[in-house]
Length: 261
Image (cartoon, rainbow, N blue to C red; front, side, top):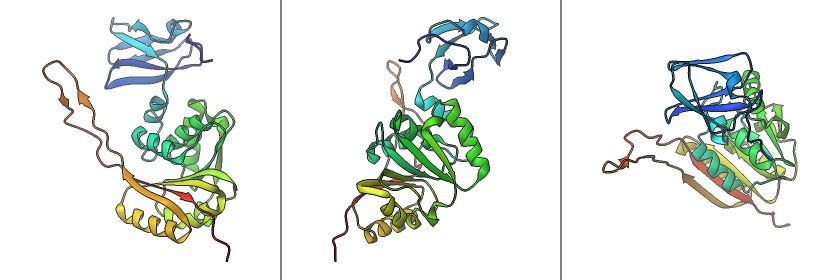
């Protein structure tokens, strides 16, 4: 059961308005400074999540319990992150849930890893491959902040050279050459297991789909996920002028057993 009270060491999302939110760790004896004054973090301890607190100049902030999307969007970034709109669709297409075992590459900031780990806990595991040590260390920090590090095994290595795990439920790829991993994914997956690949360019998609067909994958689909937010105000409701347009294509497929010769 999640706690309703704010405790020392908890992360809190301080909300000022939709464009100004701050993910902070509650530490007694410290202040959080903003352009709207500072907030004494001591005063948050023991209060309910959702409480409104005034800054030193009387501007009200709301102390919210961080959601999964907050941890993703507020990740410490050394690479581009996977946006929640894409991560949500990847999770759904992968078919994973509590207890699932998932192979992922590359780790990057750990944004997608965070989403995967959230859905496989408490009994599942994400095995995530990353070549660059600085990315891996940053991802570890982000996963720890989200409270999900226990459900992830960070692996150093080039997944195009092979996957160590076997009988996994899903393989999720976000790397430049996913088609090179397809044969290894086939060996790692359970029968009927799912591979999901995220690629920013259509050339990558074409090569990946060709590799999937050559390696006995079926139910191959490619989609693009677009999300448009709305400005809602009586008499003025309309789509926002600015939006995050194309981020990437998502290709998914299922492992079919090869017919004995």
